[in-house]
Length: 308
Length: 308
Image (cartoon, rainbow over all chains, first blue to last red; front, top):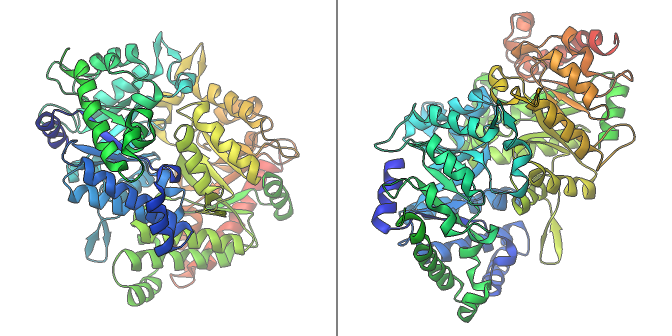
């Protein structure tokens, strides 16, 4: 799957993942109306609304980007009905040829990590048969519990040719509270980064490992160091756009092959129609605004990955 | 909710939480048969089996312990159907008067943390009304992302009088890889513990904060230090029993009031019938074996919380 991701990035010239993190407040009125009319003004109706909204965006961008990254929290907030919308979104995105990165940030130990890995990446055995729960291509994972938490995920990735993105340095302002603290003179995120590179050797693709890292766009100097520490690690980069990360800052996240990083944008694409820049599209053409926002992001990012 | 937890521990003389972490291999044959017959040998049937299994255990132990802690990964591995079994388990346990700690180990930033908090502890607004997604009383949370990840959860806890248990020092062998690393001469888990105490001041109950900590039974010396660092913090203690933690080791996790800690046991209770000690119960009386295992654990723990 990491080989497919690299190949698709090259084919499309787009190291871009679209974050499908719908808030109900993003969903245009005409979709809300249909969803509430058909399913009720309740958890089911709200989940239907975000699913229809996602479907419109996927239809508008599937030929431009290699991957989408649904943030499961945005679905989980609507309970079971929301999780159904999450599954519909995963399945539809895959049907449209997109690679799906489930932003689930799970993490536990031993048999519990195995259960998460099974549910999201693998197959669960029931009687004589095997079944899939959520079935993403990649998921994000939290490293705080150490190797016991990560290795069970890697075992399932090996069986399935799927991958992980492990949190190393997150994009938020307070990420430094623990991640930047110095241990023998080096920040914790570097130690985690080294561990990710080590874990990554357990499951290599052609050029890059199936085990990637999350490094925020908002800390470019740290990204530069981490790129060197983890040369074979694909970096998933949140924090571009709405959170303040700029294309210029991202050039060190890429390797000389133009690969090694994939930049996420969520709000800036899925709710583009709410931005002054795309105001002319209006609510009904929200998906066209998203398409244009992807094209603009692609252009913007060239600074980063062409001019290394 | 933290006041209720403390009161129920005192009333029942049982600082015990039963971990509802069902594996399909734990479920007795007679339950499997009924579930597969009614729902099919598939994700729905497997989820029905773990729900029926849980129900039997809840019925057998609800009057002995204050709380249960379902581990969501064990449900999530069965996809949507598993999540329905998770909700049924939560709802039934609450109906039986139990406090429910959702072991979800979620953690993200900003609006994403808010979405998790909303889905698991709060209410989501849809149109003019509010709805609940999963509705646990407490959930476990991962601190790696810092305050940005925690404060949105605390905001929802304030509105709902609910609480958190934040991972500080986990019970697994490799927990030291990052958690034990020294920062200015002190291990990371102490810094996290201090932060938990600080966050805890934002939402105090009568004696203890609504914001608790997770500290494994397998590291008693560290537990002793953390108890001192976080005097008003309730500690959720995994790792007793199956993972090797002994009652004698736990005495420093409690305060002089006999409170301040609640000890989890999962396999040792829910799959007690598989242990040599409870062999005489047999599969069909698995829930009676679980009840006896709780009574035995209660007796065993007296060493820890009576003789401080």
